[in-house]
Length: 89
Image 1 (tube, rainbow, N blue to C red):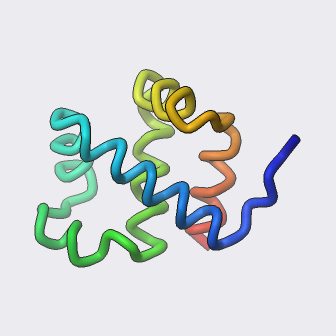
Image 2: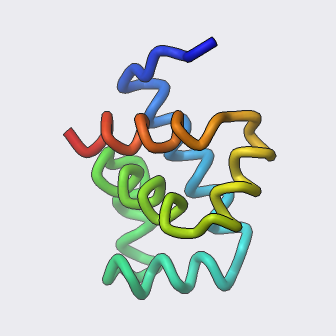
């Protein structure tokens, strides 16, 4: 069953993804380099839809991270893609 991807659901998934990425120091470091952010700006904008979309899109670029996140959160990778698209609108 497909969960409707509301703005609230997409933001919640994005926050869970940020927590997941932050728990992997190498992944967090790579995300910061690729996004051009630093830890202070990440803390400041962590809840912004654009930031959450970037985190979800980052997961989509790494099959290993995406697979682990989806297993941990019991979500389909397609849901991550749809949430990223919803937040990027």
